Length: 138
Length: 211
Image 1: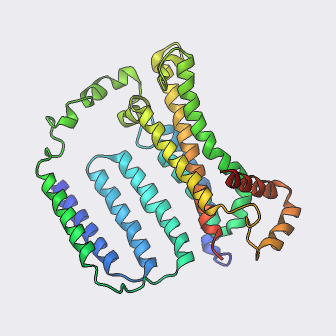
Image 2 (image 1 turned 90 degrees about the horizontal axis):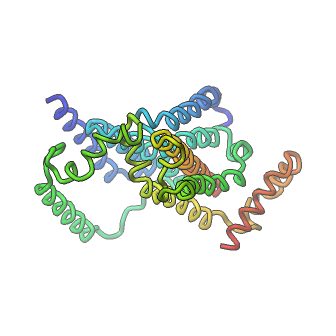
Image 3 (image 1 turned 90 degrees about the vertical axis):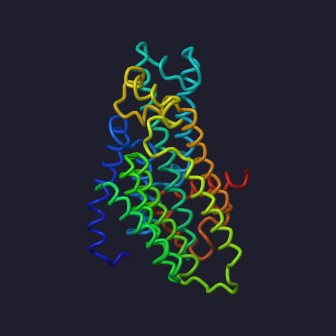
């Protein structure tokens, strides 16, 4: 793909907007369609596009597999940690209402945190799966 | 009226795409067509007012799946082999299952029926009280992340498990991380770039080895 100038320039232009759109979907999921799952996939697609155009080795430098594989677990731990935070606050597992003095504000905070965890795990998993599949290409 | 027309058009396109997928032997075209099929399914979900589901279908089905299938295609080859036997038994199984499913839809309540069991249990409570209880305008997010947060936790665990399974299957062991052919190149790159890459290779290998 290194010789395709149009693809390289267009994808270079597009990747920041894809990442920005992923963040919008991530944090706007409370108000419109979207959320962690969709945002994670879109975020990963930016890295996958980079890997397709600029080669796997460059993509592995941008998103080091050591970091990405840890993020798979980190996202799930963020989600579970929010659940246990509810327990510590005196509520049930994943009861966000006790995270703040005002239950509605607590719900808002809890949902934002767990959606971030979902997005992290999904994005990291998708990037890892792509890396592992594409690396076998020889 | 217009909605019916859109539904019929989308279903016709989906049927045509499915038949084309069956008939084609070029796997690259099949992968592209299955991406188009997912996009049509996403449009169908939009027509059914399930925007969040449509979003997921478009991003996962049409986007990531297509890329992963192309990555697999690079490993396998581009032509599908012509089957040796005529697939009569699978055809019978598929036809029977399809007929049974269509027969089952006759008992289903009409789409959007307010007296359907699914719309009588907890749905009215979610629609009426979720804004006061959770404070989000998007009821889908309230249900997924708060009321059904435990289910979503399970879903994320499934994604996590899928990632771990792929790492175990394809991650390789410590020695053959980069492959024998590419090893010298990688070593040179690592020495210049720093220790990050070599570190990750070791970690991945160790994880695969212990599990």
